[in-house]
Length: 269
Image (cartoon, rainbow, N blue to C red; front, side, top):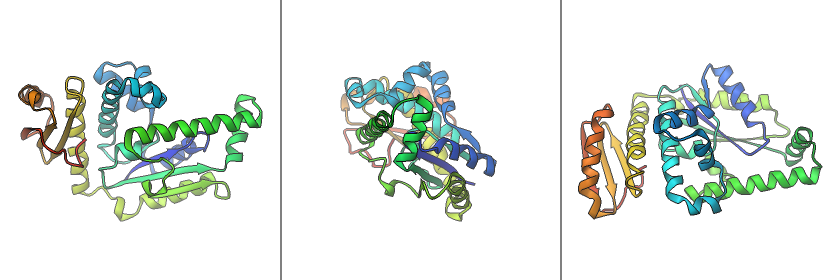
């Protein structure tokens, strides 16, 4: 079975598509639950975490370390949530946060601008020009946020396995396409793929536990062998001690090493 991420612009009916896909496949639907998990585990308010994934880039640039910290918390919580597979996640940047997992089906829902405008007009009781301005501002914000964090444009179709435009195609058409794609063997949760999810969960959890004290730290994990990287040689001994202290709280770690002053692998989190 697959893990499905559904990316969407504002007022594109992506949430409705996600709900219907989860219901048809019998998958668990997650979104806000990830923030609640991160809030409870790392003792940060849900409101602060929500700001970290929604605030404008100008704000984030002033508080880059806090933002990096909160995104690490959110990513760790998200990966823990998808460990069992059979999950539909609709939330900001899910397709990027779960990118290392091979059997993630990454879908994006878009919609005709006039349709989006009419939804806002009806919901907010504003004029069509005002509604269009709201949508364009939100689209720009999402684009800047994703580019700042990942160097990617969320509208780039190459980031997704499937892009469906709700216009001539309906919500039910989008649900059909996603469900059929999820049944493809390429998105099957093989033992190898499930191991990659477990490895990612370990790496993300270690990163989340270290990043407050060590802002410039990266982690890889493969079959219980964990490598922690830092470009700061002066902190390597302290980082090793702290990393070893965490081993007792995380299952599945059989070997742990710290590497300082070296190039960080591209697959590190």
